[in-house]
Image (cartoon, rainbow, N blue to C red):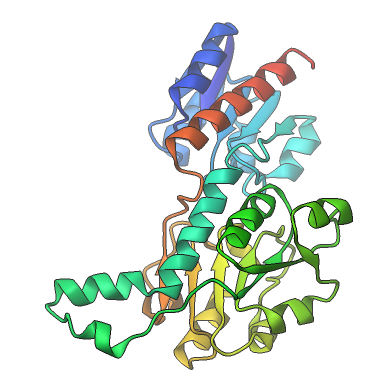
Length: 305
């Protein structure tokens, strides 16, 4: 019997594809080790989302042949443990890109028009808030894209349709694809930071946060920062400090270094900060596409394809 353990739920379309291929699907009630490890004993495959898969879970699965990431990132999977066993790791880059791009745009609009603050004001009976606050039009602003992948490529035309100028900094971007999207390449990261009215992150994380205190200081006063990519890209304490002293007009995060972020995170008290619980790809359409895609890749890996 071929068994696939779902560390976290996926859409029914993905489950149906696995079962149609003759794979028995076991669902972990939650991704904690007490629920997950007993299920891994007979698993040939595992599919995870933002919970990743630990070395302990991999070690508990002597038959494990493939790990599927329901999304682009694999940074929460213990890749060294998987490689040591020759276990394939597959992902679904691009499957949820449109939904993440739309969420990034929604966060930009929410920041520019202070929508959360406006909502709180009305609920508190402070209709005069409108006379004390002026919003920001996105038209004419410069959007800086740090990284150029599926999400950035989906976001760029949405921003340009609103009249924004779009520039991108990426070591891997194809000049032709940037030109076709109407995006100007920005070879120097410092220039991107200094010139962007809104900085949107779409890069892969490294050993240290790309956006640390020094790079936050290079952003222009009044700029906004949006991160729908990876929490590890941002030094969260440095961002909270920059917001507290008014060095940025605001920021919006859909991803965090630790998920969920701890109650004592400096982000919780930071002003002009919008937080969403890693929902950029959580639309019905994206969940269906991603579930189908990860199931297909897992099935192919089990078949030796």
